Length: 223
Image (cartoon, rainbow, N blue to C red; front, top):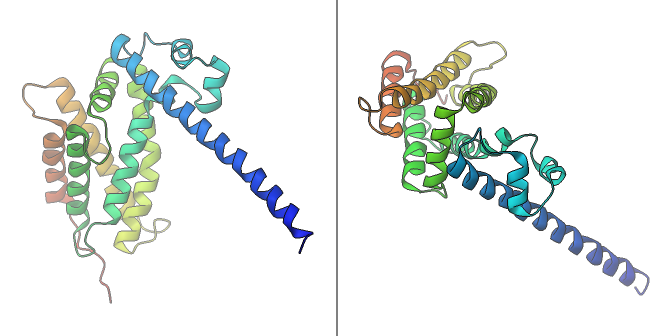
């Protein structure tokens, strides 16, 4: 009994500093994201440098690159959160809901949450993201690249919902690609024709209504 006590104590002492280190790393990462978006909003994406972001948090550029590979990666943290929320919400849609109806209600709901500051989303950061993708060709390119990568996961979620194997069935790939196009079409319409379209969520609703009319499919048969 006495031999195990020091081992238990050592284990506890070993885990506590590790927990503190992880919390410190998370705080540093969040501080870098906060500083980056503040600078993006103030100066614009292209005019902001990695050195300025690091200086705002009082860390070195080397430390910055331990957390992010570029300033584009920092800016995409919001889009990453958006897509994570979309996938989670899509998985919670009713099982008997047709796929394009489920996608429409999911993406419009998340877009509205971003606009209203719901579900933990920051409206100012959302507006900043929209401005960056509109004003910066580099940011637009990275945003589209990110969306393309997420399309693979979207395909898997759709295939699971329809009871199809994406390795042998084309339909999940087509629906996921159409959804990605719906996102982009709505964003482009709002960006280039702001007077003709309403908010992003309203325009997404219109875009996915088109897809819903032409691409709806019934859910898989539970039997």
